[in-house]
Length: 337
Ligand code: PEP
Ligand code: MN
Image (cartoon, rainbow, N blue to C red; front, side, top):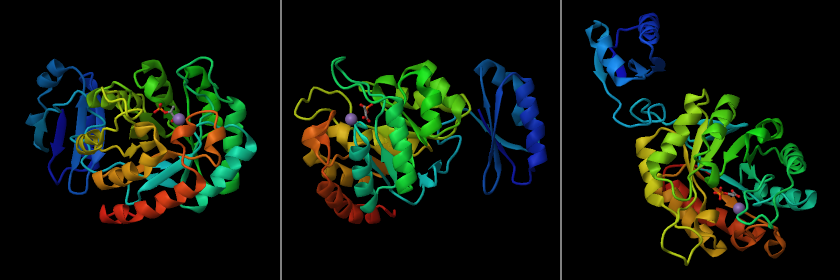
């Protein structure tokens, strides 16, 4: 339920109502707006109906939140959320480019690509240390050593980092070295993990599951926010369809729809979305045009030697070209790089 207060209602008035909401056994949310205060009351619909908040003279309107997800809904917060990864704002005026290798492989591999993408305008460094590989015989990542290398690269370049956490037992280590926790597509509905990252308060990049609906993705985000962490960034990374010419089908519908339905920032991952390095730049331009808040792309200075996802990695030159070709699309979308 959303409770819109009259313009003259003060923060003190709101506090009285928030207490009443809590006493009814509901979860209160306080959302100060520019013109008026809006409150949220989350919980059992039957209890909500018995509380009669509309009878309060300071209440202008009481309306139900019609979606299953509540806290991430635009109904609850009409303005865009901005999530800070280190000193980089995601979701504001800037279109953020995150880049780096699929996997951290060695100090020289990571540092060289980090310097390169930074030079061409990447703001956040990506790199997997714990890797969710389809085959158990493939490279599984460097683990904590990889996290330490990411920290080193971050200290050297000034770029904050994003890296995947696959299990609850890895959360503390990833939090120690990394600025933004990535929940991979395969773990989007791992509710224990979602709650665990929700309790950290760190920014979370939540990737849409391979076969997850948009509503399921927003409900996964709701788990993290409900656990106390509002710093969630959604990421469309392609879904499974009947098409086999590309690794996945990048669902740009989802980007436009999630931007409408939710106040959270939305990124696009054209690397996993297509699985084809030549398609990364065109789909990055499309991401900017459709209203995404940024992209996350894979880059490797020697893709033929990459230990994972080499076929979709941009070389240093291709990354430079991407940034050049992206610029007019970002500007046309009213954003800055
Ligand atoms: C990745 O970012 O390297 C990754 C494994 O992504 P996804 O979870 O989207 O497959
Ligand atoms: Mn990858």
